[in-house]
Image (cartoon, rainbow, N blue to C red; front, side):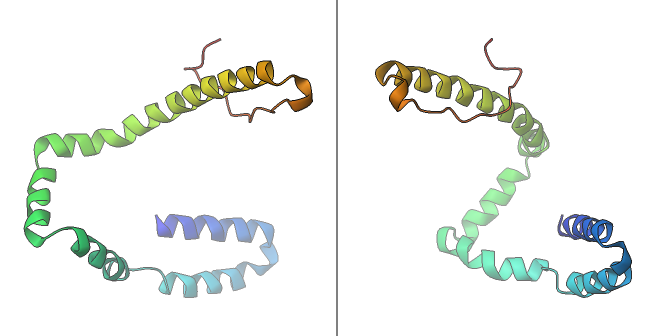
Length: 126
């Protein structure tokens, strides 16, 4: 992910500054060498896990997450998240509409509240 992000940044910078392509490439070579490593992340995250879990609890969690059911769940979670996100937007749009309507009724136009806008979703009521 980090490499993809850096590559996208490099591509964008080169497209905005095509005459500096070589210098941008050199700068990103240096930046890539300074990238986070797994060891960097572990040094920061491990003490947090140690604060909340014993080694036995982690071993039990590893067993649990290694089961077929959890591996199947791990594969499906991104798909579930994709489907849930637009449904949440639809629910929030409906709720914001009801709140706005109630406030407009309670407080006439002199005190009117402007409703934030979001993208419509297939789950919204029409």
